[in-house]
Image (cartoon, one colour):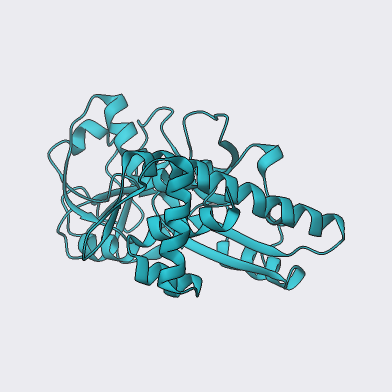
Length: 300
């Protein structure tokens, strides 16, 4: 089994299209098709169901994809480890992050990393924490900054970054808001919010998972009527008094026009962010270098 066959297979699996995959790989479509057929002959199983418009993975293809991604990630890590021993950090840093993650200034951290390691290509993807954890475990990402995971595993470990309580944001004219800009109703509990209309992120995002966990622990059901994928849309909807939002405390500084009310009865459920990494032996040199900068507080 040749590595190029696995590279070609993963590209087609990602693009679900032979022509687009061939263009991305800068190979001929006929050559790409021949490579996939060679892999299928070796494995004695079809990997794709082909149609005139797209291709989909077979059961055998789905089984191969996770292993192929892991093998290619290990090969890349081996090349980068050799380069690191020679004193030069090369290759690619593939990073994932949630929006406005606490405990790390991602842009400043990456700028500091680029200044120190200009030969490393930086790839950044923003996504919900659940998807990021899967991608780190599968070797598609070197590391990610996201909401905490419940437990480490053989494929994933977490390094704590920050923890903070949740805060309720609402329109200044909302009945929950007090008269002063920095005042709140005393002893506001999650049960007081059971009848409110909530604006929140989709379930895969960290702040939504933290809020869901807090309400579930309190035994309170809530209605999330407005779901968004970005912070500014959430704040816009709350600013128009279309709902309230329970968010990490640092979100309150993003829109001074909104009223912030501390949530004091969330128990142990707080917004905790972590760096998600593979096990130490599988962590790439680039990821280790980035974490070193983060631990030293180098973000500018």
